[in-house]
Length: 336
Image (cartoon, rainbow, N blue to C red; front, side, top):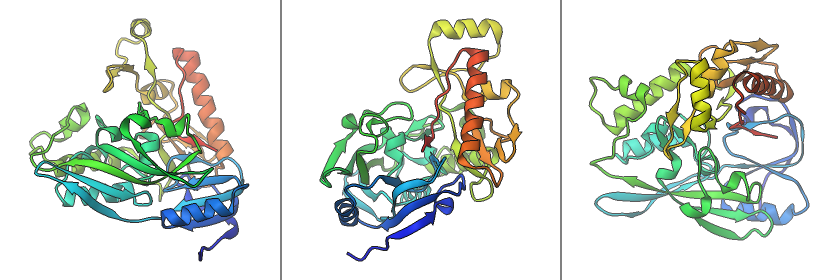
């Protein structure tokens, strides 16, 4: 199999933080067979899987093989009058897939527009935004075992989805490589989700179509979030923490206007951005590592920060949040 294995390759252009670390080896793969071949040839090598590189913080050189998933393809594999099932290759760009669905008038992913990253990474993270989560449109995914190279199909239940989480981030972390994802999407008339207050406000006076929802989401994200091509970042760095009702009552006595919401499972969540902002850290900068001036949940690389600088800033924020609110912030980003 004719694959281009490269040595001592910088990963700077392959991660959205723009962190300049070296990988001992690097290879791009475009099919499941190529993934299986690489795994069979590199059984004793440490392997780092990269898609869009948008949910990862690299803190040191990688002493192994970086495998970049570059497979492409969107296929309708089943449909009826109401729904269509799509099989999408893991290397497809997530937002490009959302645009494809909008063009073909298929609903369910419009609230997730402009999320950076690849299709293969989406189930790992159970990506979500503006009142929606991937699991609501997820049907199944195909993955390859790192140890055996054998393909396996995971249904929704087997993926154990929860808030920004799945079995692939926990029990099976590093054990499977997702090669494709099947989505169940709704034909017209669509289910319209405007449960998120800011989104609903943005849509005032507009017809509530999936296209207009996506446009509103894109506008909101573009106003708040920095473009990784201009300022290195990975989007939201921390998860919004879940707290008990008793803890909320204690916090409300100190902070009368503390914002909170209930997630899709009815759990109480406090916006991490509000806590970071309340601490006066929005716009904070330590060298070239900083907190974005418009969105406190986003940590940024202003140019020459390395992964350790970003990690140190994240740990400083975690400590200050814990000291002030008695709440532990958990990174959404995978720190390597």
